[in-house]
Structures are given as C-alpha cells and as structure tokens.
Image 1 (cartoon, helix red, strand yellow):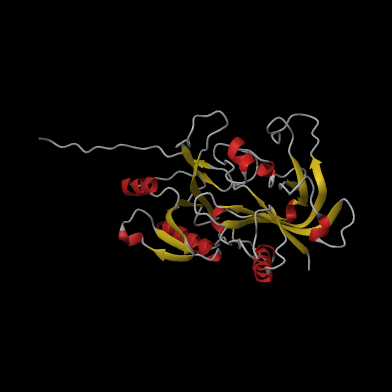
Image 2 (cartoon, rainbow, N blue to C red):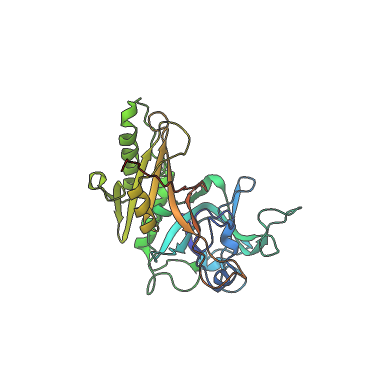
Length: 331
C-alpha cells in the first residue's frame, strides 16, 4: 500500500495562479498579509506535470517521518493529499491529491528561461512535490465534502500531517481516491445517447444535476413547484446548497433568470449555485457557477472588496446583466 501524507494549504478553486475570480484564502499569516503563497500553482500543469508547494516546519521535509527507510534527497511513489480550510463554511477539507508522487527533502525551484505566469512576488514558484498529470485530481469546491479531523488524533497546527493515529480516516481517503481512479469520476454528468424532445431539455438538465450531486454524497430535494427562487436543495452534513438549474439545447452559455431567481441569488450568494447544462439532449455538459468574492490586494483600503463574480470550476465567468422591464397601459 502506498505511503500517504497530508499537506495543508490555502483555499482556491483552481490553484493555477492568483486572479480576481480565484483568490487564495486562508493558509497562514503570509497569505493573510500578501494574498499570495507558493501553493497558488499546485494544480497548474507544465509539461504534463504539476508541482506542489507546502510550507513545512523549518526549511525541509522530514522524509524519514513519512517513510522510515527514506535515506536520500527524495522519496518516490507517495500519495499526497492536499487539504484546505473552507473560507466560509469552515472545516478543513480534502481538496485533491497526487498519487505516485515524488517528494523532495529540500525546496526545488522551477528554473524558467523567461518570465512566466508562474512568477509571483518577484520570484518563480517552487515545490516540494511533483506528479504526472494523469495521477492528479483536484476536486471541485462542492465535491470537497470530506472533513479532516482536527485536534487530538487529527491534524494539528503543522501543515504536514502523517495521520498515524487516524486509520479510519485514511481508509475514507483511499476510498475517495478509488472512486475517481477506479472509474469515471463524478466531475461531469454521464452523457445520455438518447435524443429527447426539445420540451424535455429542462427535465434532462435537472436529472443530470441530481445525478452529479448525489454522486458526491448530497441528498437532493426538489422545490421546483414551490417558487422559492431555485429548483433543488442539496444537503451534505452542514452544507446546504440552493441549485438553480438551466437546460440549454445548444453549446452557448446564455441563460435568463426570473426576477425572483435573481433576487434570491443575491440574497443567498454563498450557498446559491447556477447549474447550466449545455447540449442537454445530445452531449450534455454541466457548468456550475458559484459566487467568488474578490479580496483586497496589498495596499488596498482596509476591509474586503464587495465586488465578486459567478465563476465555474474551470474558470468560466458568468456575467449577469440586470434587465429592468416595464408594462404600459392607458389611464
């Protein structure tokens, strides 16, 4: 059985570099002060590999603590599980993993011959772990439901955790990884080959969204007929999401929201999801948009920037244009 280790970092959606729609949140005093950190690029591919950073205690990783027989400058064939604290709901959660990874005792620098998008705070990003992209899985935010135990027997304050006293939790983690590596991971709904009638587009979209969230362990309830401003409610532990479903027969991401839906979207931003299924009758693809609030950059005025955007896990931004209508009549 492969050696496993847990690395705790700041929270991001994509980990492909900082942006207004994917700010890094949490992760320690450095992130709080500068809104940046080495883990920002943990899932950004380069030449079919990814390079992961964690801040260890001291300047090096204790490879012998991970595997007693380690005696060199690197350790191969390790499963690295990345965790982060949810910025609004709290709780440290599994956000992704590298399998068949290589760990390095000392910090490794990525030497680029020219400036790149990996550059931050005036220097190139570096890493302690690397893996081939085929052995990498980043969970979408709503799929990050597995909570990491904290306190006695669980993860402490260190960013590196070995889970020696948590065999039950390790078993849960291995089962989660197996779900994604033993078959088609539940990151997109299964494609349906049957050609349905145009009037069934919305019905098919709702079915696909239900399948997706149920595969992640959520309990679903339909509230379509209750006129509450969303179609489905998804519950997983303390997480309660409000899902508005839009089905489209074509590939273009263009939707309309009713005044009630738009009102409830603004009232419940952190728990509201806009679930759009494109090409619902032929080659369905699910796009889930959640609200990302921008954070202040260094030197900005004190307090959070209330501006934000509706962003999908793959970085698509859904622009919402408020439309004001009127009705005329004779007096």
